[in-house]
Image (cartoon, rainbow, N blue to C red; front, side, top):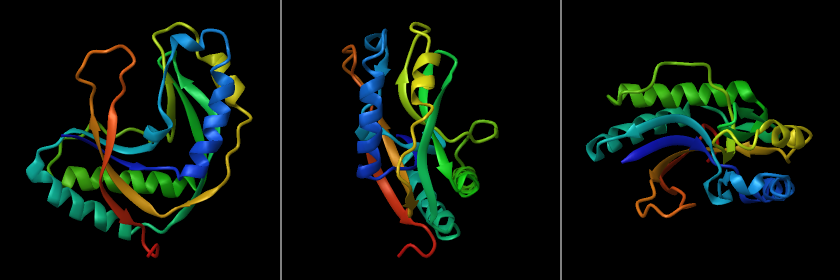
Length: 189
């Protein structure tokens, strides 16, 4: 199964971002982008790709320990950016160091469980809003999102999510995300 560790924003936060993206969707060329659905919005901490079912129990134990070693921390959605003309994203503000630490711990948990991970690289927190194929350019969308500042919330859990890729081949079909496990951060219950 395809898995990733993530921080999921709470419903009031996604509602704020939904309003902000509604304005973006009125910009020229917006219909040519593949917009992600609010129910799938997340901050990926560690992408694990394909994981054997037999590995999930050990991975879950290690993610639980990683969560317990990490204190709850404040986070908010802030501004936006783009990776070339491939992906438009919302950024983060708050305790980014704590978010990076949680990402490093989730990555280490996967590696120690025997999961082959990509090469270590600097973690850049982002929540993907839309994907493009080069047209339209994404810079105007990122600029329109630059002033966005969402309400702060406290991150209290680490989540393991299964990504179910579309199988029908229908245009516009999106991956479906299913929570496999949740672990409270240290002191969060």
